[in-house]
Length: 253
Ligand code: NAP
Image (cartoon, rainbow, N blue to C red; front, side):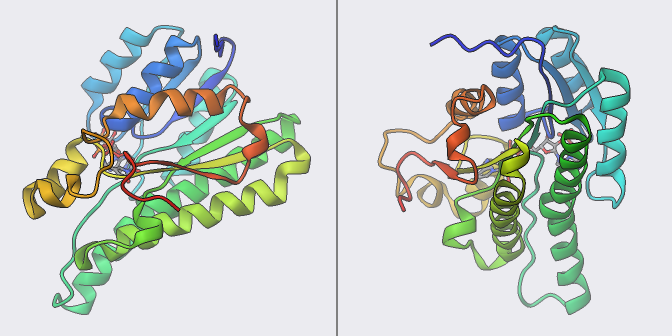
């Protein structure tokens, strides 16, 4: 089946590397113009914009800071004219041991919630308002995690909680704005071979990431991009509110 996304502008957060980069690449191959969001890896993001073409551009924003998400959305609309699809992919997994002082533990908790949940929510709010104002049948695709359903290691409670929040945020959007034409989906990966997973492997070993796979190898970013592209095309619109698992058969529910 041929997917043609030309004429669509898609904002992909955290597209400088890992999963976001693979998603942005596949969407651009289907013809979309990509707003490539990054935080620290400016050169990677600028190179990607050049490689992807279709008038794609890179945009910096530190999503651990309140107010940055909204400004990012406004800048993209101002310069690119529209956001037809929003893909919230940027995320962090930062450990905090339970024996840390409360203030220190909460500092990590708040940063993870800010990047993974609050900035995602702020971008969703912006997108919903924009879609309503323009009477657009927009789509939002939020990258959550298997951890939203299974929980995570003790040091990563904030990560699991932030991702569970993203799932219910997505369901609420799908339910509240479906009649306005707005659709929202969650993607829940298991371990995916990126810098983020490397940090887990270094800490807990490969048995932790690969032990429960049904398939023969760990998921790679390229294994997520086709499904995201399919959802972006509108062909899965009647799955609005759903969570799509991509975890090499490591967790089925
Ligand atoms: P990654 O390789 O660590 O890349 C993270 C991306 O997020 C980068 O583009 C990074 O931008 C951006 N980012 C990090 N901190 C940011 C901040 N403060 N403000 C703005 N952007 C920031 O991660 P990944 O593995 O591709 O993960 C992508 C998404 O999938 C995340 O939401 C993650 O939770 C989720 N996920 C990953 C796995 C896994 O095993 N990898 C499993 C389940 C879910 P810069 O590089 O430019 O700083």
